[in-house]
Length: 306
Image (tube, rainbow, N blue to C red; front, top):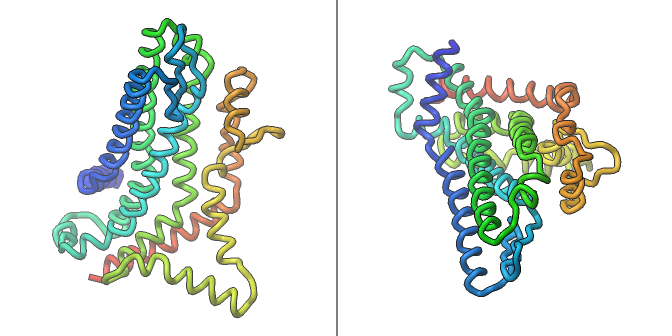
C-alpha cells in the first residue's frame, strides 16, 4: 500500500504543476523586485528599502536593518500562495477527473477509491507544505547571498550585520513546523473541499461555501447563537499558533521587539515549538475526526457519483 501511495503522490504532483509552479513564480518575483529596487535606489543615490532589508547606499560601510524580514517576507508571501494553491487543488482534485473522464482510466488501475482520496489529502496536507518550505528556504538563501554581496561591495561585513545576529537554521526548522502543523490543523477544511469536489456535478464553489453560510445564518436566526461562525473562526485563527508556545511577556505581534529579542541571543527559537501542546489539543483530534467523516463521504461519492 505504501508503494502505491508513493506512486499516487507522484501522480498528483505531476498532474497539478501549480503546486510548485505558483510558489516558484512568486519567489522569482520577490527576487526580481529586490534587484530592481536595489538598482533603482543605487542609481538615485537613495537608501534602499523594500521591506526586506534597508541598506544605506550613500555612506560606507553600509548599514543593514530588518534582517529578519529577509526570512519573514518570503515566508509570508509563499504561505499565502500555499493557501490559495491548496484551496484550488482541493476543489478541483476529484471534480476534474470526472469532468475529463480520466477517472475511467485510473479505475482500470489496481488502486482503490480510498487510496486515491487519501493520496489527495496527503498531497495537500504534507507534500504541498514541504514543497513550499523548500522554495521559501531557497528564496531566502538567494536574498541572503544578494544582500551579502551588496554589503561586501559597500565595505560592510555580512557576518557581523546580517548572518551573525539571526539563527537562520533554527528559523527554517520553525517555518517548516508552522507550515506542517497549520496544514494538519486545516485538514478538516481540506477534506471538506475534497468532499465537495467529489459530490458536485458543477459549481463546486457553491457547495464549498453556501452550506456553511446557510447553516450559520439559520443558527443565528433560530437559536440566536453563533457557534458555527465561532468554530470556523477558531479553525482559521489558531492555525499558525496551534503548535507554538511562546513564553509569557513576549508580544508576537510586535515584529521589531521580536526581532531584537532573537538577535540578542536570549530567545530560544526552537523552544517555542510545542509538539505536546499540539498533540494534546482537543481541537486537533476533533478536527481529525471530522476529516475522517468528510473523507469517507468523498470516497463514497467518488465510487458512486460517476
